[in-house]
Length: 133
Image (cartoon, rainbow, N blue to C red; front, side):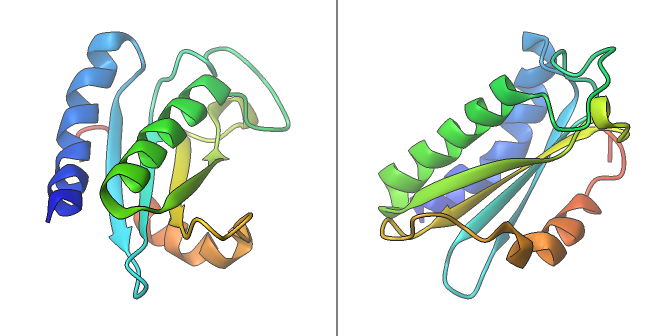
């Protein structure tokens, strides 16, 4: 029950705190798979890391690792699992916003195959079409 409380509060907490900290307008969608692993999908419309940059690869490493740390903290403390993250969209690459996926995994899993989560990320991506949505 503690994990569900923490997960359910993430969108409200981050959509309030991130803009006030200068990290941009942000929303979070969450999915729980059949194995009980959560995927957190964070969309940020105006991160400072990608502002006025052009790149072939994602550039928001500070925000990605910050989010991975939050996911890892929740995973380890409340579920005895681990997590991994990726920046899956970036304004510096020409996307409309930056997006990050944080996926829980078992402690014994070395690395996730992110191609397996493409459909899940697309479904979570559509959860918020705008910063207000």
